[in-house]
Image 1 (spheres, rainbow, N blue to C red):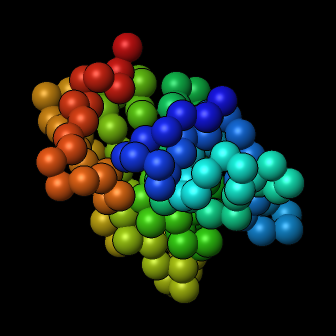
Image 2 (tube, rainbow, N blue to C red; image 1 turned 30 degrees about the horizontal axis):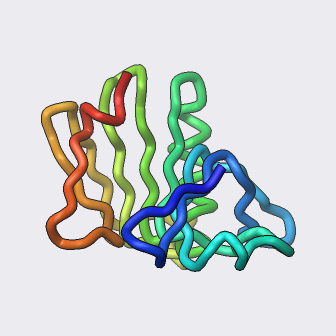
Amino acid sequence: MLARVFGDAYWIRIQMPVVLDPDSEPEPDLAVVSGAPADYVQEHPRTALLIVEVAESTIVLDRERKALLYARVGIPEYWIVNLPDRCLEVYREPVASAQPAPRYRVRLQLGPADSIAPLLAKPDFSLRVADLLP
């Protein structure tokens, strides 16, 4: 499934592959990619501007393995909609060469009363965390 976001420049791909390296083709719950759907007819995108995972039972996997993978390949922003704790975990500023492993320099935890603007957003765009939670 595809949806346009922030004009024609970005598209949301829902549960569709993103090719990050020859051995990794995750299917994040949501990925915001640049370009148009026609750009991905022959192959999947090789990067994303924002990846979102919705986690209930996969919190550890999403925080550890997926965050390391996304930081290593330079995904600028990664969110985990943490259902058990009713919060949004936001990871920004990937450091691919960090020792002992790749990581994100910035980690925020936002509650239902908070709002956030994705890095790729227009300055006046804001999203309430409560709107991401059931």
